[in-house]
Length: 137
Image (cartoon, rainbow, N blue to C red; front, side, top):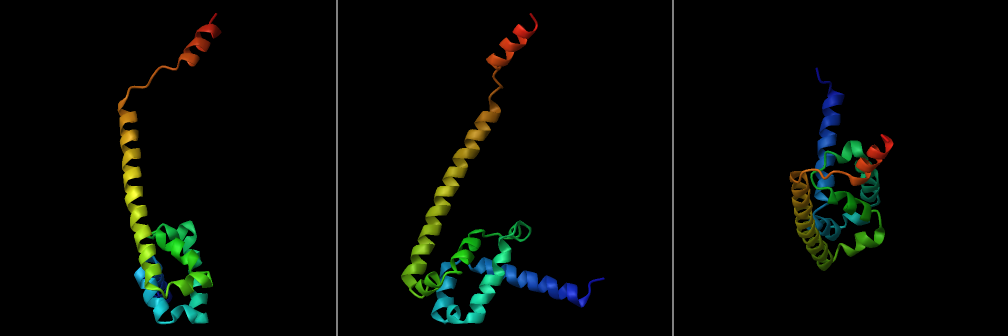
Protein backbone atom coordinates (compact mmCIF):
# COMPACT_ATOMS: atom_id res chain seq x y z
CA UNK A 1 0.00 0.00 0.00
CA UNK A 2 1.34 3.41 -0.97
CA UNK A 3 1.82 5.92 1.83
CA UNK A 4 1.21 9.64 1.56
CA UNK A 5 4.99 10.17 1.54
CA UNK A 6 5.41 7.75 -1.36
CA UNK A 7 2.66 9.46 -3.34
CA UNK A 8 4.16 12.87 -2.60
CA UNK A 9 7.62 11.74 -3.66
CA UNK A 10 6.25 10.24 -6.87
CA UNK A 11 4.38 13.46 -7.67
CA UNK A 12 7.46 15.56 -6.94
CA UNK A 13 9.55 13.29 -9.19
CA UNK A 14 7.03 13.64 -12.03
CA UNK A 15 6.79 17.42 -11.68
CA UNK A 16 10.54 17.91 -11.57
CA UNK A 17 11.02 15.53 -14.51
CA UNK A 18 8.52 17.49 -16.57
CA UNK A 19 10.01 20.85 -15.61
CA UNK A 20 13.61 19.77 -16.33
CA UNK A 21 12.56 18.52 -19.76
CA UNK A 22 10.85 21.85 -20.48
CA UNK A 23 14.28 23.44 -20.15
CA UNK A 24 15.19 21.86 -23.50
CA UNK A 25 12.84 24.35 -25.17
CA UNK A 26 14.65 27.67 -25.80
CA UNK A 27 11.32 29.46 -26.31
CA UNK A 28 10.24 28.41 -22.83
CA UNK A 29 13.55 29.69 -21.45
CA UNK A 30 12.93 32.99 -23.23
CA UNK A 31 9.46 33.10 -21.65
CA UNK A 32 10.92 32.57 -18.18
CA UNK A 33 13.62 35.18 -18.75
CA UNK A 34 11.18 37.81 -20.00
CA UNK A 35 9.05 37.33 -16.89
CA UNK A 36 12.02 37.78 -14.57
CA UNK A 37 12.26 34.26 -13.18
CA UNK A 38 16.02 34.16 -13.72
CA UNK A 39 16.43 37.26 -11.52
CA UNK A 40 14.76 35.49 -8.59
CA UNK A 41 17.45 34.07 -6.27
CA UNK A 42 15.13 31.28 -5.06
CA UNK A 43 14.43 30.19 -8.65
CA UNK A 44 18.15 30.23 -9.52
CA UNK A 45 18.81 28.10 -6.42
CA UNK A 46 16.09 25.70 -7.58
CA UNK A 47 17.88 25.36 -10.92
CA UNK A 48 21.06 24.52 -9.04
CA UNK A 49 19.20 21.92 -6.98
CA UNK A 50 17.91 20.29 -10.18
CA UNK A 51 21.45 19.38 -11.26
CA UNK A 52 20.87 16.00 -9.60
CA UNK A 53 19.11 15.06 -12.87
CA UNK A 54 22.56 14.71 -14.42
CA UNK A 55 23.15 11.57 -12.35
CA UNK A 56 22.60 8.40 -14.42
CA UNK A 57 19.91 7.06 -12.07
CA UNK A 58 17.77 10.09 -12.91
CA UNK A 59 18.98 10.99 -16.41
CA UNK A 60 17.72 7.67 -17.75
CA UNK A 61 14.15 8.95 -17.39
CA UNK A 62 14.75 11.98 -19.63
CA UNK A 63 13.28 11.94 -23.10
CA UNK A 64 15.06 15.16 -24.13
CA UNK A 65 18.66 14.89 -22.88
CA UNK A 66 19.58 18.31 -24.26
CA UNK A 67 17.70 19.71 -21.26
CA UNK A 68 20.71 18.74 -19.15
CA UNK A 69 22.96 20.94 -21.26
CA UNK A 70 20.53 23.82 -20.88
CA UNK A 71 20.29 23.20 -17.14
CA UNK A 72 24.07 23.41 -16.96
CA UNK A 73 24.11 26.66 -18.96
CA UNK A 74 21.42 28.12 -16.72
CA UNK A 75 23.90 27.99 -13.84
CA UNK A 76 25.64 30.99 -15.47
CA UNK A 77 24.21 34.45 -14.91
CA UNK A 78 25.39 35.71 -18.29
CA UNK A 79 23.46 32.97 -20.09
CA UNK A 80 20.32 33.66 -18.05
CA UNK A 81 20.55 37.36 -18.95
CA UNK A 82 20.99 36.65 -22.67
CA UNK A 83 17.82 34.54 -22.76
CA UNK A 84 15.70 37.70 -22.43
CA UNK A 85 16.60 38.36 -26.07
CA UNK A 86 14.28 36.47 -28.42
CA UNK A 87 17.12 36.27 -30.98
CA UNK A 88 19.16 34.26 -28.47
CA UNK A 89 16.34 31.74 -28.05
CA UNK A 90 15.89 31.57 -31.82
CA UNK A 91 19.62 30.93 -32.33
CA UNK A 92 19.60 28.11 -29.75
CA UNK A 93 16.51 26.62 -31.37
CA UNK A 94 18.15 26.67 -34.81
CA UNK A 95 21.33 25.10 -33.43
CA UNK A 96 19.34 22.30 -31.83
CA UNK A 97 17.59 21.59 -35.13
CA UNK A 98 20.92 21.50 -36.98
CA UNK A 99 22.33 19.15 -34.36
CA UNK A 100 19.36 16.80 -34.63
CA UNK A 101 19.60 16.76 -38.43
CA UNK A 102 23.33 16.06 -38.37
CA UNK A 103 23.01 13.49 -35.60
CA UNK A 104 20.18 11.66 -37.39
CA UNK A 105 22.17 11.42 -40.64
CA UNK A 106 25.35 10.39 -38.87
CA UNK A 107 23.52 7.77 -36.80
CA UNK A 108 21.84 6.38 -39.93
CA UNK A 109 25.23 6.06 -41.67
CA UNK A 110 26.70 4.31 -38.63
CA UNK A 111 23.77 1.90 -38.44
CA UNK A 112 24.05 1.11 -42.17
CA UNK A 113 27.78 0.49 -41.85
CA UNK A 114 27.19 -1.78 -38.86
CA UNK A 115 24.47 -3.71 -40.72
CA UNK A 116 26.77 -4.17 -43.74
CA UNK A 117 29.58 -5.30 -41.48
CA UNK A 118 27.35 -7.87 -39.80
CA UNK A 119 26.24 -9.26 -43.18
CA UNK A 120 29.81 -9.91 -44.35
CA UNK A 121 31.27 -13.31 -43.44
CA UNK A 122 34.18 -13.15 -41.00
CA UNK A 123 37.60 -13.08 -42.67
CA UNK A 124 40.21 -15.58 -41.46
CA UNK A 125 42.96 -13.97 -39.46
CA UNK A 126 46.18 -14.64 -41.37
CA UNK A 127 48.47 -13.89 -38.40
CA UNK A 128 46.54 -16.23 -36.14
CA UNK A 129 46.65 -19.17 -38.59
CA UNK A 130 50.39 -18.87 -39.25
CA UNK A 131 51.23 -18.75 -35.56
CA UNK A 132 49.02 -21.77 -34.96
CA UNK A 133 50.76 -23.75 -37.74
CA UNK A 134 54.22 -22.74 -36.54
CA UNK A 135 53.32 -23.67 -32.98
CA UNK A 136 52.48 -27.21 -34.13
CA UNK A 137 55.97 -27.71 -35.69
